[in-house]
Length: 193
View 1 (cartoon, rainbow, N blue to C red):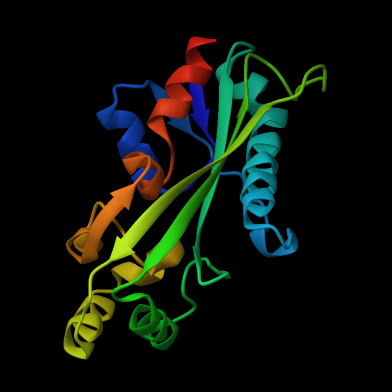
View 2: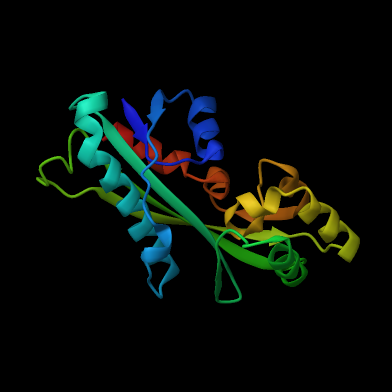
């Protein structure tokens, strides 16, 4: 059984669509308490904290053989890290900068497999997957209309590829599902081991 240590509906949908049986247990980790200057290290630390918090309790609810997956995503644009926008004004300002340019969506993944973390006997698998995203050139009215939907406030980088934000992405280089919240190819390899 895979336990997803995330409240993200997009990650749940990815697992459902891929036919991967799972349950959800939200970690409750205070993400703001975890800091790192390197975005790749930051998302891995956040993913590990979420997975570890759930792995410590998972044997009771899901059985000893459960695997726990934690993920966290952010967008790096012109060297600046963008998580979820704080409000509509911040989302609009970001989109004014991002429109017509490239950013990197980075998702940290951490998998505690088969009882890891319960006794601390082995290390989890950790990875950061990077996907380059080219945003469409947009008019101020298009940006305002997208921000008004509220969708950008729920997503790392201020857009949801699987939602209305998909209309605003011109090109992707790398893993498609990574932009939505987790790399299915990486997870497939990990679960096959």
